[in-house]
Length: 355
Image (cartoon, rainbow, N blue to C red; front, side):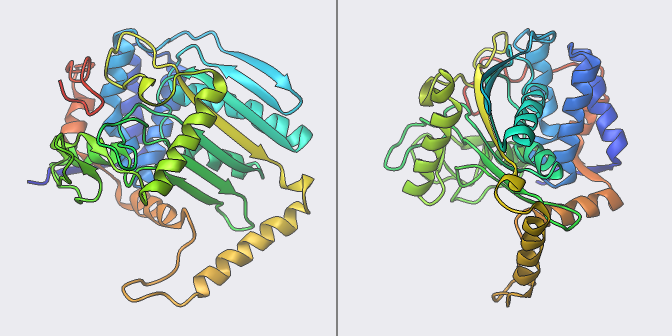
């Protein structure tokens, strides 16, 4: 049975989430940034990285697994490189701080590469590359995550969903943005299906017996996209955002739910490129706008109304949600309104939030 949805205005949802995160122990500025990030996700229809995450974050914050007064340090290792030491702060704040250093170096030298070391979960990567594109930079972001995906030919989870995001500025109102997990589907999408009591496609995941499942509650391993290709990509992401920073790899990455009283020690990497160091900036942006125009003119296949550029459907969804309200599961809305910080739901669960 599908759960009833509540439709909220952007400001209302953001305020509810900020209030809950502050009650859990996060300082006001950090809670505001996280709430803004989660609202961005819900606005764009990526509910797997929106309000559904607040209770988990709140439980980890309340139990001490998030550093609420972090000692941020940026270590510049070269003219265009550096490591941002995040002190296991909540990832959304740490990643945005690190991004600012990368953008600054890209403006000055043409390229900025920043690794974020020892951070918490940082939400959706498109949020960060969107900021970069709005500053006329091309951006690539990768982030490791806890082992949830079975390797190609294997039966036991080893790598995480290990997402990749890319953006580029255009002369249009919005940039090109591409954001994907290296699994067929992100774990958050399965969490979202759980919260709404919805089935999932049998191509997303397998159960404890290694068999395809449509039950979001029976998931015990996610599948890599396109078999060996997705497997190779998730290994690449793990190397770039984990091993490159001296952090744990693969199955040694801490589970999101294993012990909420300790930090995650996750890694993330930003690569920022200043187009003006390679070509004329305005010509570059105009070229991409022309690319979008020609894509729109491409004859759509049967069953499709139009060819869209990466990120365009999210733009359309955002406009719809701004007009009619952001859909939130009734149970999540009730939680946000409640006096409870959390329901002790996640601590010492496995990677799939099962006790």
